[in-house]
Amino acid sequence: MSKQNKIGKQEEFPRTRVPHAIKDGRHPGIRTISEDIGGEAVVPLTFALATNAPLKLNEAKRDNGDPVGTHYGDLMTRDRVWGLPFSQSPSVLIMDSYHDLGEDRTNTVAGMFAAQKFVERVYGEDHGVVAHLLWNWYRVLSKLVETKGPTIGKVGIENITLDTVLKDISDKKIFGALSTKNRPGQYQKNFLRDEMLRMNCYGARIQGQEDLPDKEKNELMKSLEGWIKKAESGERSLVPYESIRKKSDELVEKTRIVLSPRDKNNAFFQGLKGADVIRGINMRLYDDGYFGDMEATLVQSGLALSYAKSNVVQVKAGDGAGNIRIIGTDDPDEMQKHYTKAEIRNRRIGQVLTHLLRKEGGTPDYVNASATHAWQMQQYLYRIVQDTSRFSGEADTNYKDRRAWIGDRFVYASERLGREFLKEFGKKLENAPHHLAMEPEVADVLIPVFKRMCANLPSELRPKSPIQEMVDSLFARKTEPGRAETPAMAFRTRLGYG
Image (cartoon, rainbow, N blue to C red; front, side, top):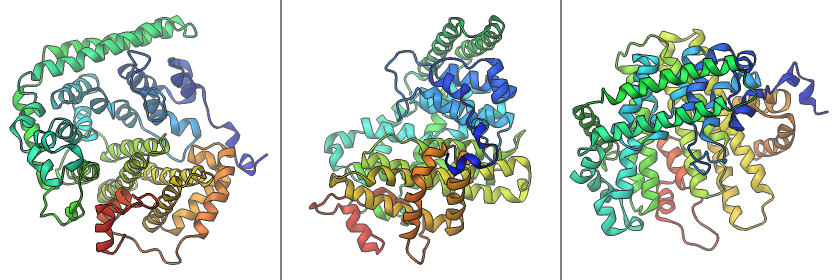
């Protein structure tokens, strides 16, 4: 028996009935959800599963191969399943249920507006506001430029520079596609009809699920029918083109500001070409675009909501923790993307919580949001240690650079989080791994790896600036043995932090 099993009531965790049912494509059942998670989770969890129900066997899945619905299920149930040191209020559970809906189910501004209005019809106006905040609208523009930019089309994706992208962002054809000028109503209807189809399919599965009592089936079907009617009503009340055009204008203008060559934070683009440019752009927009807008709205705008603003922060922290826990790739570029986004989330969410401390500090909502943020950072450490463990036994020389890159990430994480945070993480690994949503046998493997990594840390940890962290994460260790360094590495070397 590992010593973790001797701690408190750890043997009661995890409570697996709900997550196992979701992963198997079944509804967990009202009684099971109420007993293991809480009755307040029944409606939002059902909404999340229904609106993300797959329409075909090979439909796009999460990076680890699980259906998209499992991410929602994990986010909404993990604290109760594992007995984590925070809880989610009914408002947070509702926000969880739609936190990715606009991004997952549409790739147009018009479609995202339709998704926002659908959320508003189901949950109320304030949740429409939160949906707008939680979804990354900038990704619509960056994907459009990447795939349809006329200048990029001429020079080729491998030759693009920041200037190339800025030209295409200002292109009239790109703006027309962004604002769906020709068919704004059709793109909204496409989203709504797709959701109606998904909810109808999920309803059919519920009806055919033999382990659900008829009384529960009837109650669940009543909720589904109500949501389908709200989607149908959305087709009769579409968002006007003027609103879509205004949002498109805002996205283009803010993107120009964030990516301005005059901004010193964009100096690392010098000499970059091709895919490195795309990665840098997406991270800058994720940082100063997406999170910049979220912070400005929650902290500076005077926005009045009927619930705590720290609820929104808690949802994003929990979502981020789930994303970094499961990467499911050994591809260096994909790993760098996930690591960099995690580092941006850790920093940005911490900044928002610092601003909200004066008004909400000490409240249960704020305490839970802060605890979820800390847990998110612990999951980031877990990912680094887990990847170090995975790659330690790889003999292929391609993994040498990956091991060195992950070592860099651990140093950077330690510089930002501090040695006390590392000590607390180590204590949980040894004494309470369920607080990391981790089985004891997994922790037993990672404990010696983590101790070795800590022993190899520099005696002095020197925090880096945010932009240095982002550049280091995106472009560190980009070369293979025997190959020349990339322009990104050369530029990092010139700056003195390569």
